[in-house]
Amino acid sequence: MTYDPNNIFAKVLRGELPCHNIYEDDDTLAFLDIMPRSEGHALVITKEKATDLFDVSPQALVKLMAVVQKLSPEIKEAVGADGVLIAQFNGAAAGQTVFHLHVHIIPRKEGTELKPHAGIMADQAILATTAEKIRKKLQTA
Ligand code: 5GP
Image (cartoon, rainbow, N blue to C red; front, side, top):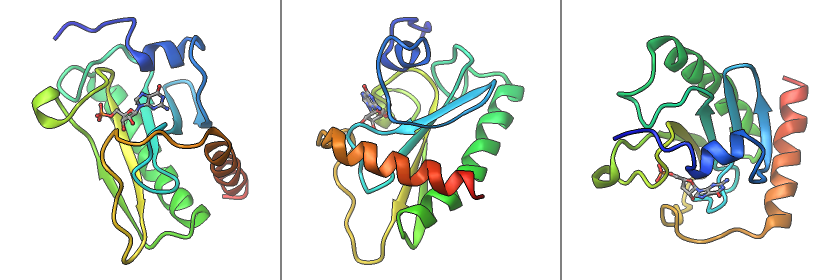
């Protein structure tokens, strides 16, 4: 699939769409999923124009996954979760809905079911509060 420069995450990267940002560096951006499957559900995206795992350079992939590794335990602690599900979908048949490479960080709490994938829009005020909590945790990491 050809990379579409007007996909939602490309617009987020260009600042054309807002997001609840939790982390940014030269190669990646992380923000909260607008339809979270659990509290603290975050997305880490590469700044490279890549549709999926098979389209990204190995260098950018390493940087992306290093950020996933760094953020996941901090997000887990910030929301008081017990574990973290890391998910990444390639192609519509696999469940991908936004065609700009991203990795899901989904905190899990014992006994709490996940909400549906890309199903229920969260309250913006709640997302803002969660993002603030995570940013504060990252500042002390
Ligand atoms: P995929 O299905 O491609 O792996 O995941 C795309 C994710 O992006 C979904 O979990 C969906 O909830 C989320 N999403 C869709 N549109 C937006 C948006 O405009 N902003 C944010 N922050 N997340 C979005």
